[in-house]
Amino acid sequence: MAMTRRIRKRRLLRRSLLVVGILVVLGGLVVLIPNLIVTRSAHGHIVLEAADAPHAQCALVLGARVYDDGTPTPMLADRLQTGIELYRLGKVDKILLSGDHGQTDYDEVNAMLAYVLARGVPDEDVFTDHAGFSTYDTMYRARDVFKVTSALVVTQEFHLARAVYTARQLGLEAIGVPADIQPYADEGRFAVRDWLARVKAVIQLHLTHPGPRYLGPALPIDGDGRHTRG
Image (cartoon, rainbow, N blue to C red; front, side, top):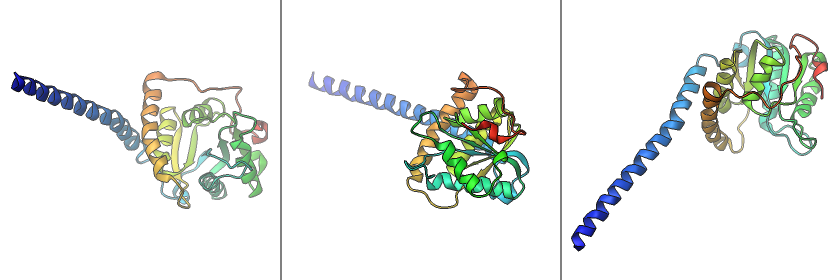
């Protein structure tokens, strides 16, 4: 009788381990497959240096955290500096700064604007998107609000594949330009987080198709960027 119970326990343990193993494998595939889709699709649409980029309507600079005093973090400063370089090289006609300005006490966009203008980019050539709350929202609004058809997407390398993939799936002729001028604190954590964000991107682009949090009137990128201040 005792032997029978031991045999049953062993069988139950083996089955439990098998179920756990299957769930682990399935969970891994749920993350791995979207990551492969994103990275392989973006491959060939990313350049190594700003000088290698083709001409596009605008440099689309993605927002990142700013300090409490409004100073860009090193990661954001490098994105802005890369966008400025593309403009100075004649690779783009305009710069589109897209970030989070959803609260009165937190404003990425005007911090980005101040940085770019202080370095000599003409005011009329700088567009500001105050509702770029996510990569998806930024690309959607670039297409529908700012009427962008071609863009050089500027962000760090860990984020670039997802940004380019999202832009191209939404119909933009997008090329990625890395902004990794210096090493960053917690870069590994950001990279891991982006692995999970790629899963969400694939779901949004191929299954749920949400709209952005905000749209608004058209502000074409070939116009005057001063009309986009807020």
